[in-house]
Amino acid sequence: MDKLNAETKKIMQERFGKDNVIALATVDDGMPGVRYVNAYYEDGVFYVITYALSNKMKQMEKNPRVAIAGDWFTAHGTGENLGYVGKEENREMTKKLKQVFASWIDNGHTNFEDENTCILCIQLTDGVLFSHGTRYEIDFTAGDEKESTNVSE
Image (cartoon, rainbow, N blue to C red; front, side, top):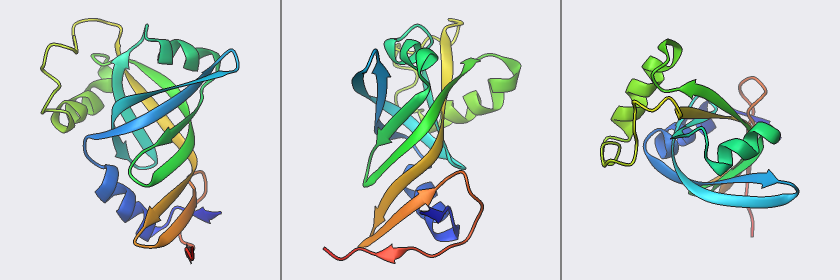
């Protein structure tokens, strides 16, 4: 497995450094569950604005290991509730997420006054990224710089 390098960092940022819909899978009592979420990628992490009392958040409290998929990318990671979007330590990310999700964030579905409106942080551990015929197996927990291999199918 390759480390996250300059090339894969660039691909990830270009592809996911904006509003994206990804599939997020969790496990509840041995039964997998998957749903689509709007997410934003930055430096090995996907961020989601969600609701602390939702099933996905309850499931991650019991088992924080998750899987995601979207746009020729699949990965594993660890989900963490960063807490209320209005907390002081979340203000910078909340501001960024409001800008990234501007096309829909004020449609009445998200209540920023509700203390259960929170930021879900998905810290990636490993993933597989495809881009222009190249398959990148990425270790997000390692340092920089190592080459990947071309896919031959």
